[in-house]
Image 1 (tube, rainbow, N blue to C red):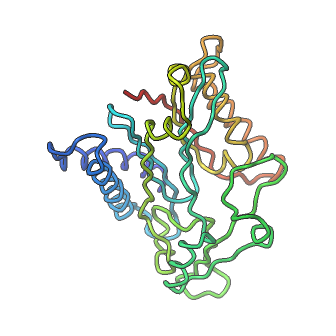
Image 2: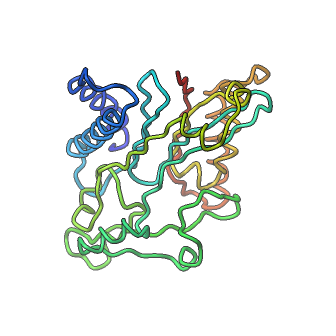
Length: 283
């Protein structure tokens, strides 16, 4: 219910705020414009969180990308452990390279854990995660679903063995967890194509050989299918003239594959599997 509500309302609220608060003196691509879009994202996420209809133990993640239609910057907003990837497609090799991913909001991450502890919340960190670097990587090998740290949420009734154990430290909804440090404010990344080319020292030929697209997916996809595999199949579907698979068909193939992998590893249980792809046509 909450995820469906957010999918319908978040774009509408963001667009309304974008239109209503537009400052004609703010130039697209400027630092002032970056701050303006960041604030609109934060206001939109918080407004939709206040409107969500369940008000209890139901919630969802959200990950969004905005490109203003001109310039070299894209804006990625995120709460929870879904992921938006910005991907480069190299026309000469027909290969895709992930150049940016948003941070997943996991309870054990230092800044998230500090906030949770300050609110009186408790974080459970499994032993396997303690032995890894930070548990926030995407290097899946399809052998095992990685354990996640959890935000422990007490039962509102006070029952000792009730409550939830959320695998994220930010979400829309899940209002019962707000008292122990869960928040709905998104983290907003500003990604600049010009900055990327400068960092990579891209030649004019390399710039000409590149196309760009974005992938948004929930962790039910990335937990079992490597992000690089997702990016390569979708890049071929979007840009390769030799590929007969449309972007929609490629998404369906990946969702079916993820579903089967979840069945093999977890039986009847599977996490939410959502996936979308779009071209990015920078100017």
